[in-house]
Length: 326
Image (tube, rainbow, N blue to C red):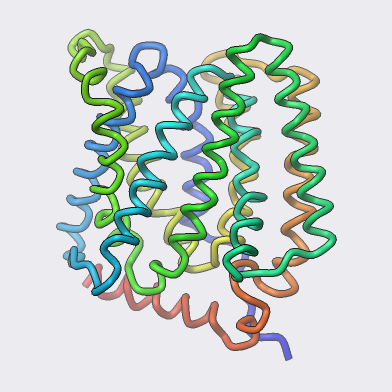
């Protein structure tokens, strides 16, 4: 007998994907005035301060459980350190449309890593959808190659960042059963500086921050606090409530949102080739994830689907929110 199903809609995730859609535009504008290395470090510092403030207001305890220190530190290094380094360098070289489309493959990578970790099984339908999605990305990569060597490198870097994001999403799953999302992200942030400080310290000191415009500063605050701190918190809350696979389903709404925001804000357009690539990528992701999500619950081993494990996760999330909000 099937276990209880988890609601498909999650407000924190919905708000997160909208913020991440605009984040591509905000980053493209900022990267015209600040190097990727400088932006990674300063954004990480600002994001850490935001998370500490949230923990202070919500009275979230910042204590690491026994045996979790290295795992949490590595998660921070991966999710908010190495991932951002690769992503920012890639986005600097590519377009809003191509970057957002390529990053959507994180959903497919999540399925692969979750299967390797024993969290779910891969079906023939999933493999077919993954093939279609990667075919769409290949078309996007072809468009980048035709536009120049630099843009192709940018797309490949964004593809690598998608794999890193997916890996960190799966790695966070078990930790989110023991930690509140805000608590986990704050504890993990020092791990990000292992990558961010060597990479970004000298470039950050070289930037003349006083010459940035008011618009640049507002976008920086948005990137760090909105799409950064609150975005990561919203996404992690979604992973905790729905599981890694279901949470990643929301990410394929990001590319069309990014394209719309890019058109509205900076006048960027999508070519026919890019549109075809996006359509195939999103169709492949939907094909791979949709039916299995309804049938057996993405993010959990089939043996656990009928045990109410998703309901237990939701109860933990509710309890954590109650404890941290008083």
